Image 1 (spheres, rainbow, N blue to C red):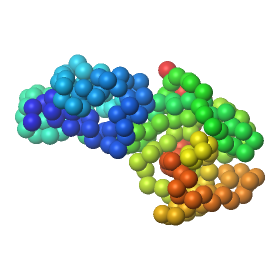
Image 2 (cartoon, one colour; image 1 turned 135 degrees about the vertical axis):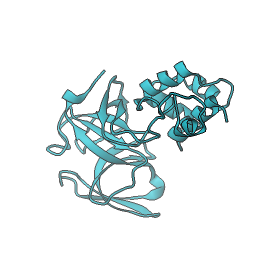
Image 3 (cartoon, helix red, strand yellow; image 1 turned 180 degrees about the horizontal axis):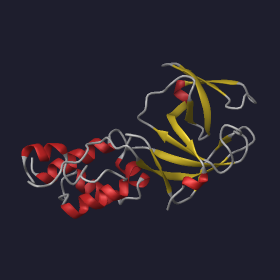
Length: 216
């Protein structure tokens, strides 16, 4: 492989199971350009690799100089990147969730910005919460960041989206092939068990940060 092919291989690993457009939208990239890179129709040069690192929030060298390229000596004098592990990453804001009285929402209002969070998940994202339905655990205006690739942990928070389009933040009680059992964060609405085939996504909540941490 040449250096461009190695960079594209590293980019593919970053994207993982996400759809190209979903990954592009998450990091404000051009889906068409990203597809051309992944399909081998465009090379991934030095400047383009550095631009992608900056936009995704990667440690310098992750795409510019993948570890395998350094091992093969393709670009002498350049330090290898840190692979896909980075102490902090940019978690782009997907939008603002206006909570209803049950602490749920149907769609996100557009918003710009991001928060920097300690994670190795390249698909990390964040959501700003509006409303007091999840207080005091999640206060009005605070930001929840999620790690789609993180294993689910019973007793911790998750963001669940149902096939109806309804999304909620709950405490995970258990999850199996048949159903997911959740508990209201503030105990107001008790327990909820949802058949697995009614769930589109269920993402681990990595943390909650105050609005002062929003950047951009």
